Image (cartoon, rainbow over all chains, first blue to last red; front, side, top):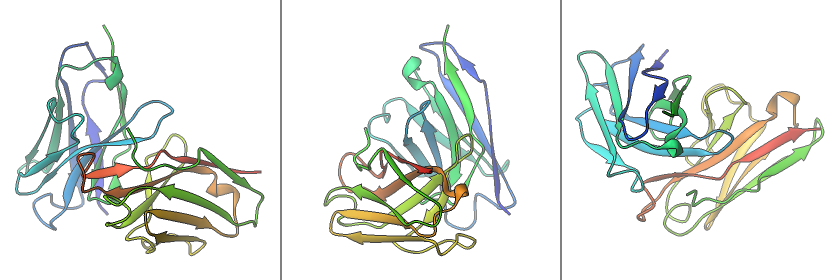
Length: 116
Length: 111
């Protein structure tokens, strides 16, 4: 059974960089040919796809966030990571990591609040 | 920012059939598969339907999906209390909005 777990600071100051890591267990990131995604959800709102990385390292980002997003993968640790720069209060959300598109396995989500 | 439009709410009594619509365009639903997710409040979304009308293992056959042109629908038959949740459609998008977009979401209430 594949499991994903997000980790990272729950509070980030405005203008700083949000950094989250997703640890995958029960399966290898480097096998299976899946996209590994980050998705976020603002409080009481819908889902927003942020971007994905393939096990080869190729990435694709939501055009609306592209200038601020970087997703990377560390196959040796079976992890992939999200960095979102120059954050504002509008980036406050629950951030999910997920396997595949469509996403068939999800992490539990982690709330990141942007506040001074 | 959602490019897929859903009604904000739908409701039904236990045993009834509820249908949720998802309206898109030629760059997403019109040319790609549609997916549906169920999200119980406080939990992560769960994949409910993939490739328009296929159910992952473990999803009851009370849930069914369909697609016609640039619109799609999710039907829940034999509504149960545990079906009370938010439902989102999604699709790949070939335009500058893409490549993967979610619907606005529909809250299903079991009366």
